[in-house]
Amino acid sequence: MQALYFLLDAVVSFFCTIFLLRFMMQAMRVSFAGQIGNFVVALTNWAVKPLRRIIPGVGGFDWASLLAALALQLLFSALFIALSSRDFLPDAASISLMVLWFAVKALLRLAVYILIGALILQAVLSWVNPYSPLAAPAYQLTRPILDPIRRIVPLISGIDLSPLVAILLLQAALMFL
Image (cartoon, rainbow, N blue to C red):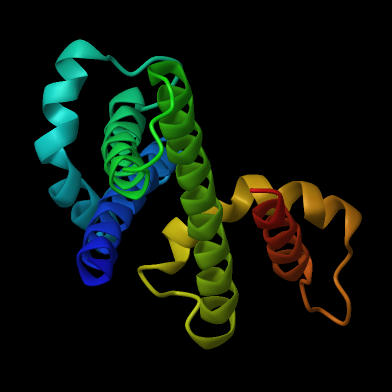
């Protein structure tokens, strides 16, 4: 049963991450032209395109992508709670709130992990290959987080420590989640 849970969790987490990445890329105006953008769009169009007929993008946000991630995580959370609480049967309202809480918490954690991964990718690429095709999307994805930190933390001997500060802050946010 643990192996089945592990595999199901891996698949759900992968697709939720891709849906969230699509939502975040559009929200932060990251270009979808390129390998990463094409990859994300190709893997998410099966769910996002039909949802866009029902839920339009409003305010520059791709709500269909976010809803797809939430729906997938809600299904997984409901399945997990149903399988783990066979002996304990709380009322339907409690189960619904628990499923919603687990799903939202899991999506927030995934969003933080996406940002941490983008920050690490950007930091490594800035030293190794700043003209990589991955550098521009990583920069655009992390710019809203790094710009306020850069106003506070100055360059030290030409080295930007703002990604390190941002990763520490995001790790602290994960502790609360």
